[in-house]
Length: 546
Image (tube, rainbow, N blue to C red; front, side, top):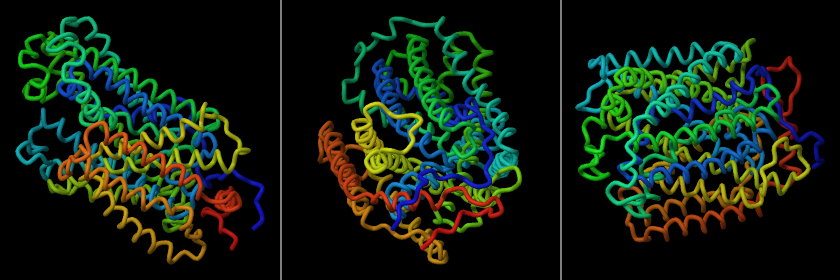
């Protein structure tokens, strides 16, 4: 097979109309959702003052992942990047796995954010949410459909107009936490930081358990949204890496400062029953930061925070509706999904993928408690998609060292395997119940994508050899999780600390196995060239040469 000269894919029909600020805000609005109102409360009752360090550790882990995505996005600025990098590096078998989870993650978030809006709206409008069942009412379901429709309608705007709308919402989402931090800094009780046991009141195990258990590491996820929209970012080689890194650094600073001011602004009487007592404090449960504002005599701030509880999830749902359509577009470009999903309109919007995102999103609005629980599990399980990025970066560094890298991660030979270990820990922290259901979702994905590819005469070859490590990785993570410390229905046979050490060692074995069995250079370049830009007369991905 002759080695093609081009090593840079390109998207067809999409228009590069999003600038640096728009790309940064795409990631920021995904990271800072409604959860910022509860994260510092959960951190405080889980680890006490040490929660501040937990946010720093969690942020450092995610910054490493962000650096990897920055290099990949600058190297190959294609839409739906998380679904496409593994395809280029390891071929279709591995690409299907990581691509499908990238799609599942994207498509479930918008409906979940609608659910969050209804829950917060119930503070003023009780008829939209049933607190006894923990689910939306019939009226709430109708309003959620209206919200989903509005996400879709705004996404039909040209990217330059959509970016302005999203940026406006995100300016608000950033301004409110920053304003809260500034105001609460003037209402601090210094003695809280040494209350009930000092800096590490619940011990080191509680500190590290809080990183997954209090949702700290998961609060940072979403930084990759700039990669998902890479095909529509102006000067992506320059703007995309800067946008990802800026977004995660900004959000890390906000989350750490929020934890500091939350602990400091607590009324000392709130700690009469220790840090664990915060979990059952009825005032904090309904809205922890708004409760602090009210207790400090800042009623106007409490009102703004409750308003933000509507705006924040709306903004997050809006951008995830965008990324869902782009990931679907990317999977069609990989020729995993039918080619109709790669069609774009004259404004550069992948309209078929956008409509499918709306229709399938409605399925996740069905008001069944068990279904809502499944949505949460599937969303948590989607952290598997992050594992594809460090593997892809390592493979590109090994096989295509001469490829243009506008941003190059320092010490990549260390950062890449370290990032893969971090993704393994995030998956492990998700819990055994999530991981075994993740396997079921993956099987469903293989069946659906297999049916689609069976009818595509131009489908890419199935690269089983380069993905031989994948089933071992998935099964191995399931076994370790089953024997480990996180989640219900596991055995807890592996002691704390040893469990994370075993995960790290296992991930390193898988990483270097994957590096040894990845695609040869010729096949990798061939897969990339199949998605090179072609005639503007054809609105579908180019036909590969067999």
